[in-house]
Image (cartoon, rainbow, N blue to C red; front, side, top):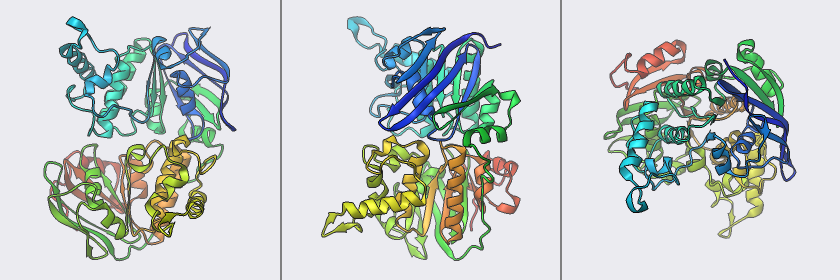
Length: 504
């Protein structure tokens, strides 16, 4: 049973300039308890986590550790207090090994105070064994998938033997098997007396893992209740202050002509003989487990990655392989899986990011027109309801959902024929998810061909006209909306359904 409060926040407030991120927020984490923190993007969850991690100091209120006020004046102080944080976005040193990333600043030393690499790798391997993960401790972090990067961050947090484990969207890029492994570890830590704070937009995970749920809205505490006494609908109403009438507002559209045609696409060792068509007005989902090759296929279609065999045509015209500029010129847009690393330049302003794909069109006499840039950014920020203090502010100051809207704005402003979205709602709240889904449905109704990669089955089933299922680099099934359900998709994704290549 949960014990006494290990860590608590009392009436904590935090402002950044004129923006109040937290206003009288409160939270209590008990030993032996998994506690969920939920709220829309911009509700103040990330600011609260950074206060617990020692990144930010509160302007008002108190942080209590074992009932006593404590001042966390930096991440080192938070770690010393037994608080470990797994952030939503992995932050690894790409040119260091996995083991060096996990034990940065804490490497075991041997003779002459030199790093004992054998011991370092042994400790790292023990952590991965505990997590049930197969990763080489000596492998460089560069090139790791999002899922593997997240597992490295989890191993790093576990290496501190923390009394409080804060998990900020740790499952956003993990497969079902990886999520269950993580939950096994989280439950073991909870049962061993640790306090676990779990932040997620996936309600099934919240109710599966957590004992209590705290809801925040607009930087304020709204409610804390036992998970057993709440329903998903009740939590959603508390989060958004209104009913979300339809999370998947899919419009019925009669598909038009074939816009995107992929034939025999092969990249040796990654995917093989992938063929499909996408028509105007159609939303086609690529489903499958993490590692099935979905993201790799759409990256190859757009030209980010090369491929060995096959062809791609847009509106009947061949697309030159390995040339993103050619794809853009043909009317193809790609919203990548990792918005921070591949979709945005975090140090640049909102308006600069929103117009990166149109800089030449906005130039006057070879020079970028600030007025045209600002006007274009303002237009698309209004269309997509981007919540930002000022368009001149760095895009890093926005919440995850608003950052995703900026990436969408950047590509939609090019007026594409084909929109490829890879995990379009990863790490964003239920209200913003509904907005993104409504936008995708409207774009398809307007004649855009949409290819959507998603690991969330409800999203796939709710939005797709057809579901293309991949397994181990091969396209194994093409399921129309009328007969798509969780069972048929998962059977194919795990290799139990159709196992032959699917041709259009």
